[in-house]
Length: 378
Ligand code: GLA
Image 1 (spheres, rainbow, N blue to C red):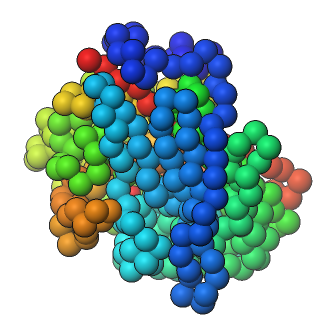
Image 2 (cartoon, protein in one colour; image 1 turned 180 degrees about the horizontal axis):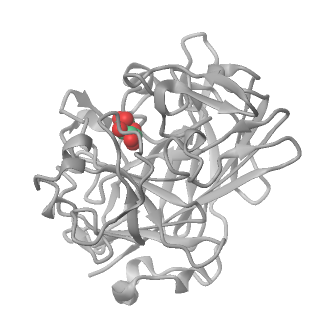
């Protein structure tokens, strides 16, 4: 079913036999190893998922972080296409970019670090100027999750966030399952329940470089986003509330366009974001999983497709990477050497009555999924 939801030119995928998708999304093999330790001595585990095509995804229990993701290019050469570090220590020392991490309880920004729910005001940590970013100073990306290998080969990660943690109301039980299928999809299923009214917005913050992590900038990647509007922001990257048409602006990715083609244009929104760091309002046909974005890297032929049922997609072009971070294999991560596609609700939704609601009530189950699908073109 999902295979049919493609942008115009993706039928070309069939040309490259290397990554021909299997008919059935069978589950990959999975193994567990020790990876390192938290500062308090608790053990961090790493889980390696592999599928028939040889794709390999490694996820650790600290932050639920996708540490590495190896996929073949059109010639069959493998490369690790996500930015990150070789050890737990690297992540502990460099939390700033949120490489590969699960983000919660509220992904993206909450304006003025406060919101009102059921008439009560809640204050959350200011960790991005006057605003709160990615769940606060100790968000889900900095928590040790409990890992469990499921009978179908999925990796289940659970984290119990206490009532009042980082200012958010309600004991929230979050479960995230990573699955690598033989249809060459890394699928992430998120669920959460609460015992008090709260707000939730979960995502994954992987930075991709389809040439391979550490092999230069991402400006030549061709991006298509299924959105005709986006949410412009104020100087603190908080949405103004407007849903602005992308037509005639550098934000129009309705047709495949190189990331670098317009990123330097004198556009006020690009200036604020120091590049792309915005939420696109996904054009949706229904409530199910739909193709949100497609990215093609011409030199490797690698293609990434992103599917979700969420209303928004934060497309961030690594504008804050400045070459001071050395990642896996000691490679330098310079300016715009990775891009993130975070499926999510719109930023600051708890303060924006016109945006789709992010409230979760006791008795309800928050459910969302992201599929990163890999293929190649010649
Ligand atoms: C998100 C934000 C960016 C930046 C990165 C992490 O994508 O929107 O502004 O904070 O996280 O560096």
